[in-house]
Image 1 (tube, rainbow, N blue to C red):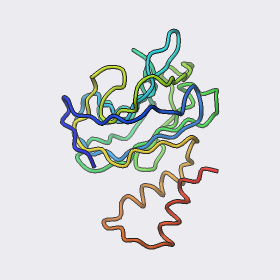
Image 2 (cartoon, helix red, strand yellow; image 1 turned 135 degrees about the vertical axis):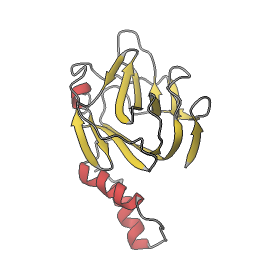
Image 3 (cartoon, one colour; image 1 turned 90 degrees about the vertical axis):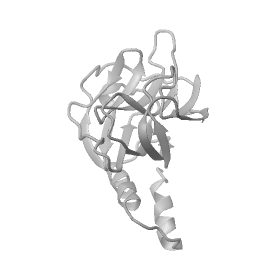
Image 4 (tube, rainbow, N blue to C red; image 1 turned 45 degrees about the vertical axis):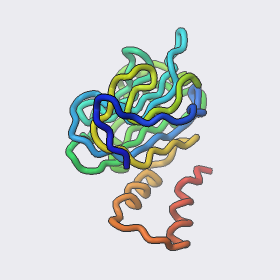
Amino acid sequence: AIQLNGSSSFVSSGRGNILDGESRSVSAWVNTVASSTSSVVSYGGNKSGANGRFNLLLVNGRPRLNIASGITCKPVQSTQANDGVWHHIAATLPNDHTNNCADVLYYVDGIEVGADFDNANEPLDTVAFNNIRIGVNTNANNFFFNGAIDDVAMWGSALPASRLRALVTAGNHITLSFNAVVMESLFDLFDAG
């Protein structure tokens, strides 16, 4: 896990390659008590006339997706994930090339927390602009995460709820030991085909 200070620390990686309105799943384990807007993982950037960002946030501990300045996709209801214990959060986009805010599904600890009804018709048009950033907004140095983030993952398809629940179950084990059969079943989780 990485511990982030909420004011200047973050991790930067290569560019995200799941673009436009393509199907995807993004998930991470988070541990925070912050109620401020906090970026968990983000990439993309500004694109003239389009929503080019993909920024998975926690706002008051609830998952949101910021896709452009002033445009945030958010579920009607959501479980809070800012109580100082580890929570798995995820956002999935099921439709290939036709996603908008209404299509985003959010999960906390493997349980769907509601579809979007805020900015429902805003299309997602993520661009390859900035590096993937963990713990800060991709476009500006704001929304710093205060707490710990672990096991950030991105898939080029929408993982079903059963696979997200399996990730949560696997992540909740206190100790993991190497067992070829167990490891193979974990790797099967990532086979979205």
